[in-house]
Image (cartoon, rainbow, N blue to C red; front, side, top):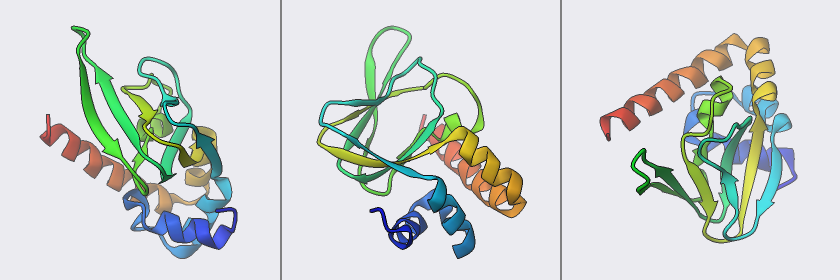
Length: 144
């Protein structure tokens, strides 16, 4: 998906970007890079640092969180259009779960510094994305 118009069309379908205007999606699309992962690869690892936000373009990903007692819980199973690593966009904290591919997977990746640069350039984009992230966090808390 190297065609910028294809990336914009794909981003439009990602829930966190639903409220954005076309020109904002075009700016975002310029900052994403594609990355391929083989089956069984860890995209992110719980407890490690991370700077990236990932959107699954193709493939499947299991997200697993290890609890304090050492047990593991499947948090989510992701496919095309799903995203992970949104907390890494907002702070320099550690990953809260491990995401492992269950088949060959392609992701769009956005670094924190690219995301922050975009938000500094476009306050409306910042508000729209942050409102959606807050809504997502509230939903996650409701499911605990």
